[in-house]
Amino acid sequence: MIREKLQDVQTLQAVNPALKSLFENHAYHIIKMIPIVLKLINYLDTLPPLVVLLIALNNKGLRGSFILHFLVIQIVFNLSANILNELDWTNLYLYHLNCLFSFFTISLFFHQLFETKNTRLAIVAVGIAYTLFFFYNIYKWEDVVDAFNSNTFGVASFILCTYALFYYLKLFKSSAEDNILKSANFWFNTGIFSYYTINFFIFLTYNKLTKENQPLITIIWQVHNVVFFIMCIYFFLGTLCNKSQEK
Image (cartoon, rainbow, N blue to C red):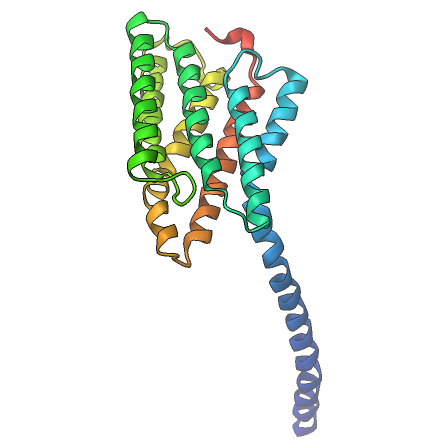
């Protein structure tokens, strides 16, 4: 009996180093993969919209929609910002431009969705007021070279989320026989609402965090990129819908 126990102990002693070595090997490979994963997350604001755009061009799922223009804007500005970041050059002015062009493009998307004259006039009036605020913000508070445009991103998020909520209300007031899940614009609107709602507080605080050089800013922006990726998934679902069913 004692001999058998000694044999068991010797077996465990022989196995434990092998298990330890195996664990350390797996842990090493996992740790080695972390920088690669983080690098991929940094490009979640560039690769997913490119994929959605290519799919949409193939199946014509974005034909006649300003979401197509929005995706092109994201690819151009986000890719440029990422390249400048890799070169350690300033890229903050690209976020200012991205914000303005994205706001106008999505505003035109909602202008296209709402049929009433008063609503369309309101969207135009808000667009003019936002443009004035955009340039005043650059002049007074957030310079295009030295500051992230938290103010204009925050205001744009609030306005676009309001448009999205009104469009949800419009859908829910429509005929109960309509299946909104088959509506491309429902998925586009959901993507816009998700992106700007979740990132609202990131946009509002990001300028302050960058100025204070907080260590969390990289992680925070990676969260933004993950939310951006989720928005692209909604856009992809929208491209799969039959545009002929849209009202």
